[in-house]
Image (spheres, helix red, strand yellow):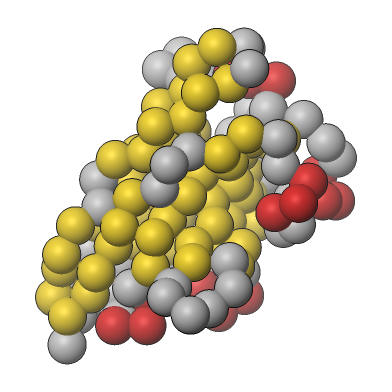
Length: 125
């Protein structure tokens, strides 16, 4: 089992920034590809970003490249998501997730084994 706890969400004005954190406990953190997903009210969950087990290879939803940054610190068992130039459309609950499946499945939420409870990001115009 892996337990994931997100933090760092909040209310921010358009153009602002936030840094989300996801602390992991349980099994060896570095065994897992880590991903971030988000879900806005009335919308389906969508892939945001993923990072490989050693923090070298990163992947983003195309429309978010350049504004969001994923990183991880395996010594701290934590994955981060930096959110910059936030827009009202970024308003959503953000979830971190862990998978030990193949990198090719990184954007598919159904391939993830463990999920956090989510942290809310609200961007005002």
